[in-house]
Image (cartoon, rainbow, N blue to C red; front, side, top):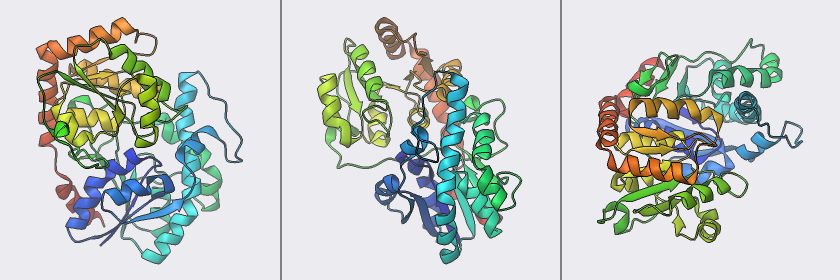
Length: 374
């Protein structure tokens, strides 16, 4: 069979779909991954064949409307949530026709799209084949789907579609105990951490005597986008009696190193996280799920409203602490980090969550569900 995967606009959305795409190819299926230009390196790094269907960066869709006019960022949390739907709706509109041309030439049997890759179900409907919606984090706000459909109304009307078509199968990677109450009725799949792989050095896969804390703001960190957030978090942790590792894309590592006074580089979290006593981060879905898989306590400081609810669920389970914007004072961050490092219950609850992740079906098992569907 031919499996066409469609990702979002950032490397993290590629990493989330990589385990299933790799399992499908290992099972003997033909696989293509369609995405935008800025994710091609991540797709190639995963050893998967990638097709570029857009040269427009996801950041542009977030900050500009369809006409290319810069958008004013709102301070209202609800409006920020709605803006996600607008951005991914705009991305879907740009993807739509190039995807269709790709599919007409390649003839997939099934389309598998990431959570907010709204072009994927529309493409599947046009082709008359099944669509699989694949979660890439612990849950997105429901309002995003509603707004994305509003944003895509011109494209949907042109195709005679009442709305974004329903999916034939939903795949969820979030462990049961921290799923949202209104979560999809979905097939569970184990989260397998994936990321770009630099040549490993011994310190990346071995532990020293000091406590180890890793800090990140995700794969999209850049000047004007999570850069100041990361600098601020690192500054608040400098007094901690621990080895501090700071991860960021290599494109901004040198600049962040100057701003933080620390060595900054890209960390392969699928390796390094296993050696850590604590992960401190922006509450990004992939980072949080990796810590869950490896039983690492987490200090979550959400830098977007949509990340608050998943963070609070994780904290309520007892495997993390959450500090909301305004509450993340230097003292609060230092106290929370020390508590997570020293109070045994956090590690115990993190181990319980890791047990749930390990018990979820492996990607190879989920491939069989997709085969039956297609």
